[in-house]
Image (cartoon, rainbow, N blue to C red; front, side, top):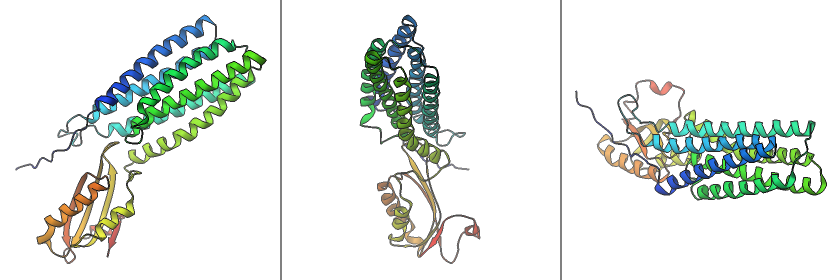
Length: 307
């Protein structure tokens, strides 16, 4: 028996992004160490706990980088798409880590509200200022590509979230230094947590949708249907499925009803070209005529549209 091997394009991490991840990881590891040491020296549990939180950024950056590595693994008989789906799973994991970080900030802030502790405002602000520079610069490294891939977006949001936290700590440190009002630290912490929740929601929603093989956000279902409707030789279409293979690649399958099977190849190429322009690169089409349909399978609960 002969087998037809369909070669898929393998995406690797672009050198510019690869450098961004490496720089981000190194900077954040150094900052975590500095923050932890400063917290121990000045007896600040706030700095120590924030260092532990920033460690989650290092993990998230490493996971995102690993996702790109896995997406380049070649397909094999057991994993016919390779490990491209891992990029979606890791983006979901990163979204959950962000949610965990928000929960950590909320719990810490509530504890500070209930049990305010004296804080060295000047030292806290100084260390947080370093955090703004480190996290802000790392976020800038991912700014350009944040809309191209969910894992890059996740890394960007992690860095922006921590930049906001550090800005909040600077403000609270200044207020504490001049007024001694320790509760401002907790209030700003809660405000920052709310901001991060809104920023994280889209990442979490998109990751869950893709993990469940939902239609990717950038693909508009009605636009895809219109492509079939306005392609010569197509008289009907059903069993339309659109999903993401990974965070940068989309796939589609459909049953196409044509008026003449002799024009099948021409119609197929036309459809594939139009769909690729819409962001769908992996297209599998099954052709049939109206008088010899899909043997009753069209009664399944699937999208069916004849026109």
